[in-house]
Length: 206
Image (cartoon, rainbow, N blue to C red; front, side, top):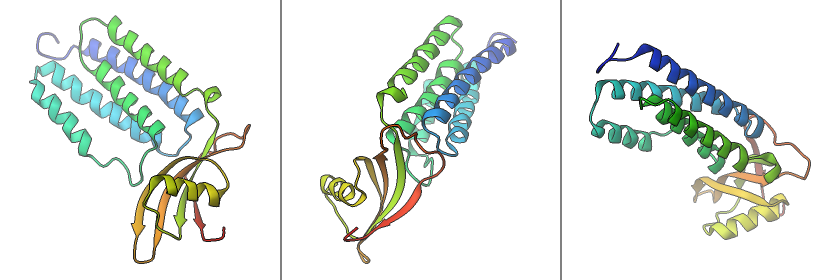
């Protein structure tokens, strides 16, 4: 089809490129961020956004629809527990692949070059040789600490390791406990564990 309709060959080609990019992204996630369920979330959002953008670009719908789409993405609650900053970078990269490949530009070389640039950036910036491995734990703390710096120091003292990231999940002021998602450094030479976070309760004197 031509004109304002869909060019099936063009859509298939762009979809193929998008799937290849997401596949390479999945390989990096499996090796570097082996957290269960990440690929399902990322690939689903990627393909859904690709389909929406394909329809938008074919029907010449106004830019207001595109802005509305991003507004919707900004308020959707993606998960029951927060992503780490590194995982968010992979998520937005999956969305970027859908944007790059989902819009018909007429020149296939430009989106392919942008895909390559993004993949190379992810490969180099999050390369394991540049970072020590980490492990994730869901910690229940028996005190409430409101200052972020004091909280990291308290966690480092009780866990006996360096804290990379600490995200407060909830605070119970009645029982005076906090639940925190914590990322800590692994000893040198230890690979990053796969699967979900482990639960750990730390008490005074630990």
